[in-house]
Image 1 (tube, rainbow, N blue to C red):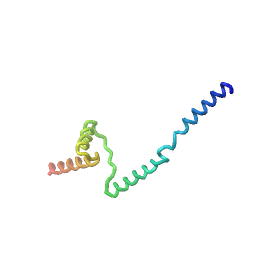
Image 2: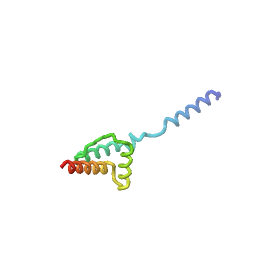
Image 3: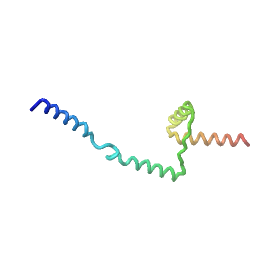
Image 4: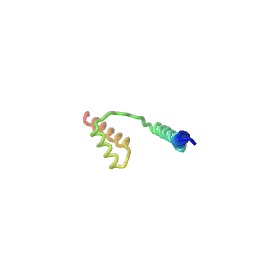
Amino acid sequence: MIRTDLEKNKGLKINGSVNSFGTPGRFGKDAGSVLERREQRKLDQALGLVPFAVKIDAGLANQIRALAQARQTGLSEVAAELLQRGLENQAITKR
Protein backbone atom coordinates (compact mmCIF):
# COMPACT_ATOMS: atom_id res chain seq x y z
CA MET A 1 0.00 0.00 0.00
CA ILE A 2 0.96 3.54 -0.60
CA ARG A 3 1.60 5.79 2.37
CA THR A 4 -1.33 8.03 1.41
CA ASP A 5 -3.67 5.02 1.44
CA LEU A 6 -2.48 4.11 4.94
CA GLU A 7 -3.12 7.65 6.16
CA LYS A 8 -6.53 7.64 4.50
CA ASN A 9 -7.43 4.39 6.29
CA LYS A 10 -6.29 5.83 9.62
CA GLY A 11 -8.54 8.83 9.02
CA LEU A 12 -11.49 6.59 8.22
CA LYS A 13 -10.93 4.63 11.44
CA ILE A 14 -10.79 7.82 13.47
CA ASN A 15 -13.94 9.20 11.86
CA GLY A 16 -15.71 5.90 12.42
CA SER A 17 -14.85 5.85 16.11
CA VAL A 18 -15.86 9.49 16.56
CA ASN A 19 -19.24 8.93 14.92
CA SER A 20 -20.07 5.84 16.97
CA PHE A 21 -20.66 7.35 20.42
CA GLY A 22 -23.96 5.57 20.86
CA THR A 23 -27.52 6.64 21.19
CA PRO A 24 -28.05 10.04 22.81
CA GLY A 25 -30.09 10.13 25.99
CA ARG A 26 -33.15 11.69 24.42
CA PHE A 27 -33.68 8.57 22.30
CA GLY A 28 -32.56 5.87 24.70
CA LYS A 29 -33.48 5.05 28.25
CA ASP A 30 -33.73 8.76 29.16
CA ALA A 31 -36.56 9.39 26.72
CA GLY A 32 -39.08 9.06 29.55
CA SER A 33 -37.75 12.05 31.50
CA VAL A 34 -39.96 14.46 29.56
CA LEU A 35 -43.00 12.45 30.55
CA GLU A 36 -41.96 12.69 34.19
CA ARG A 37 -41.95 16.47 33.93
CA ARG A 38 -45.36 16.41 32.31
CA GLU A 39 -46.67 14.13 35.02
CA GLN A 40 -45.21 16.40 37.69
CA ARG A 41 -46.81 19.43 36.05
CA LYS A 42 -50.19 17.66 36.01
CA LEU A 43 -49.82 16.72 39.68
CA ASP A 44 -48.92 20.32 40.55
CA GLN A 45 -51.94 21.61 38.63
CA ALA A 46 -54.21 19.14 40.44
CA LEU A 47 -52.94 20.54 43.75
CA GLY A 48 -53.64 24.09 42.55
CA LEU A 49 -49.96 25.02 42.27
CA VAL A 50 -48.88 27.52 39.63
CA PRO A 51 -45.40 28.65 38.58
CA PHE A 52 -44.56 32.06 40.06
CA ALA A 53 -41.24 33.59 39.02
CA VAL A 54 -39.85 36.60 40.86
CA LYS A 55 -36.53 38.40 40.93
CA ILE A 56 -35.06 38.93 44.37
CA ASP A 57 -31.74 40.00 45.81
CA ALA A 58 -29.04 37.32 45.65
CA GLY A 59 -28.45 37.50 49.41
CA LEU A 60 -32.12 36.91 50.11
CA ALA A 61 -32.18 34.00 47.68
CA ASN A 62 -29.17 32.47 49.44
CA GLN A 63 -30.92 32.81 52.80
CA ILE A 64 -34.00 31.04 51.45
CA ARG A 65 -31.85 28.27 49.96
CA ALA A 66 -30.01 27.84 53.26
CA LEU A 67 -33.30 27.66 55.14
CA ALA A 68 -34.67 25.08 52.70
CA GLN A 69 -31.50 23.03 53.01
CA ALA A 70 -31.58 23.21 56.82
CA ARG A 71 -35.20 22.01 56.83
CA GLN A 72 -34.48 19.48 54.08
CA THR A 73 -37.42 20.69 52.02
CA GLY A 74 -37.80 22.31 48.63
CA LEU A 75 -37.46 25.97 47.81
CA SER A 76 -41.11 26.13 46.79
CA GLU A 77 -42.35 25.05 50.21
CA VAL A 78 -40.10 27.47 52.08
CA ALA A 79 -40.92 30.38 49.78
CA ALA A 80 -44.66 29.67 50.06
CA GLU A 81 -44.44 29.54 53.85
CA LEU A 82 -42.47 32.79 54.05
CA LEU A 83 -44.88 34.56 51.71
CA GLN A 84 -47.85 33.30 53.70
CA ARG A 85 -46.34 34.50 56.99
CA GLY A 86 -45.53 37.88 55.47
CA LEU A 87 -49.03 38.32 54.14
CA GLU A 88 -50.55 37.29 57.47
CA ASN A 89 -48.32 39.74 59.35
CA GLN A 90 -49.25 42.50 56.94
CA ALA A 91 -52.96 41.80 57.43
CA ILE A 92 -52.54 41.87 61.22
CA THR A 93 -50.65 45.18 61.21
CA LYS A 94 -53.24 46.87 58.97
CA ARG A 95 -56.11 46.11 61.37
